[in-house]
Image (cartoon, rainbow over all chains, first blue to last red; front, top):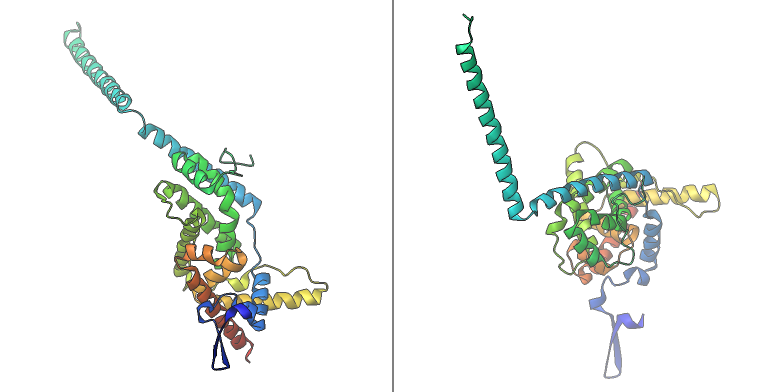
Length: 119
Length: 193
């Protein structure tokens, strides 16, 4: 091939050499045996597709994973004031519950001590 | 089951960069990338492992990992698919390492039958040739196998293959040449009694 050959003409003598820098470029086109091999490779490695059921199932699983990731991200992206309010609220509720429990316990204890007719 | 389980547009017409940016902001938008690349990744993995069951498992793991790390993806000029192929390639390499002592794979078991032949005998001969070829490919180095699969099963250009394999286009051309010669030699050896 003309484009793959370097030619020098010196003193009426022409020297032709394959272009060194193009080694491997379209090599199968220059060599009939390699060309045939490339054709066979194309036939032997024809594209295969996944089963539609697998494709759909994986899509659903990825969607579920994506939704979980999005929920986590939404919570993490709440403004600091919102998170602070949430924490203070949760702390207040748990303190109130503890206090109520304590009061109920004392009340019950006192009630037992003063109840008439008990041993 | 809805056709688009990730519940968003398939991304036709949108540029790859747009789809990636959307997926980085909203994980649900990853669905468009999944729809665009699942067939290609499956095809690649299938020819690397030679078994549909394992190909499904590794394809699933590729996309799980991609979704989990999409926020860390940085566009360095290579297409997003190159990043996916690299994930798949690493998973396949681990898979081969894990199974090296337990079983023989794989390309020679590939159940791809030849098509377009007139007689059954012709088809049988073509299948036999294709099987011999896949066996010979299996004996090549993982790097050469990867190149042939990307080139022929995936139909990628040398430039695209270079981006996936982290090499220049020239290096891929050179590797391709050496791979064809090595494959020719393998086939010759396989024919010897």
